[in-house]
Image (tube, rainbow, N blue to C red; front, side, top):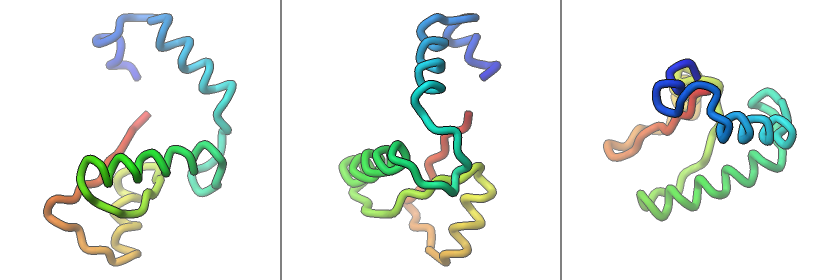
Length: 90
């Protein structure tokens, strides 16, 4: 988050208000627990992947890139040339 001040300015009220609203609404759970917001987000991401890339795959939440790669190996799913891992880092 420290680099965001370059893009959005220091103490940007819009960003602060959005973060506070999320803290009030979203559950604070480890990634392995299922909750309604995760299900809704997964559904939206899956639909967008089909629309944008024509790929019907599963959505998996991980705490980092290394875990995503290891989980992919565990499921032994081949990585297709046009496929990629989408990661959001806080």
